[in-house]
Image (cartoon, rainbow, N blue to C red; front, top):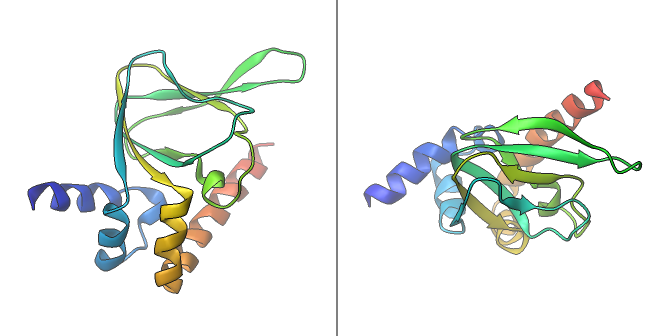
Length: 144
């Protein structure tokens, strides 16, 4: 089980899951899939549907937001342990920005349905994750 041990260590370093117990991380770890992306490849596209949460395992990406006038602005850069797509865990809404790799990148992906299945079995985890999401939303609002 060296792979599981490595994955649990990595997930515990991701801000969204820092407050999670080992048992909770083990449940989540079983649901993640790994996806590889080449440099300059769109992982998600603004305005398209979302399938869930992405965590960068290795590599990097930039978050690009297209404005109403068609101009594009880089609003964030991401690296290992950074995550995006968290809103897609909670609703079926469209992506609010595009995420494009800046180098070859490996991501862990958790679908909304798998995430909700885990939360239904563990109410405490729901609280931990929602508290972290609230912190993240506050940070975004402070920037606006």
